Length: 300
Image 1 (cartoon, rainbow, N blue to C red):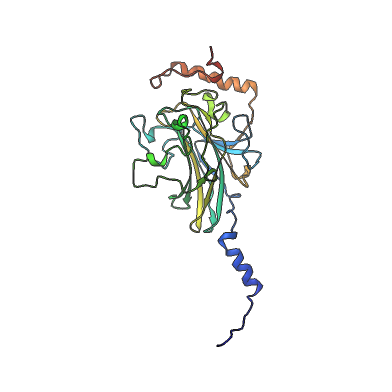
Image 2 (cartoon, rainbow, N blue to C red):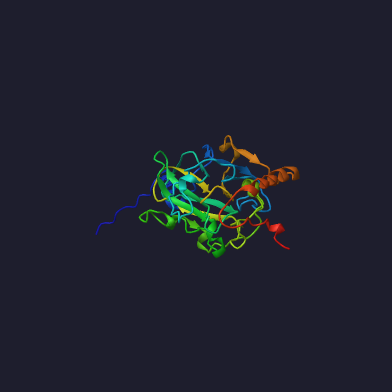
């Protein structure tokens, strides 16, 4: 029986092997690649309704249906149930610059969905990973929908399984909230990105407000060049707005050229001007039920 001599690998080879090990791979670098928006998007600081994310960045991003005239921004074609057409409703999406990722690397994102709508007029939000160049879906990272909030299913909100094409994937590829159940934080809708509908709720029986910050974790199954896409759509009509806040490690204002940084807490005069636009709604014929009063004026 022959004994084979042991030869220790060189330090350079060991270092190379460790660097290539998926188990030791870190998150891909998202900073430095500019984002571009279609519709209404921006950066904002913490407020009582939407505080800073667990990441602690001083500002975070948002997309909103308010003040957006963009149509056809969603990659999803959902069942209308007689309440609207995807191409007839406004929304916003924001897309990152291209970044490289290796199989086994992980991505952690934070999302907070805020809606003033519901009860069949189910605005929704999404986040997906797309292949750079082809813009095709690589993974679904997050969804939310306002109609399900009364049943505690705001997130993921039964969005993907409401697609018209039943052959398309109907579940998320990412893990939300570390795999734990996702609750709903019923709270105020007073948030500047919601425009003139800030402080309102379409139907108090279908709770409005923020979902609270929810973490989305994804592990890359293949290497390549990718982009991130986040969006929100006003479903059924173009009133009672919804917005999606987002955050990630390394988020920097310089990555969002052309986007405004909104004041975290608007001055009283600005807020009064914002809410005065609600007077324009008096002549709007909408849906089949009367406008729900602001949360602070329901009593009595």
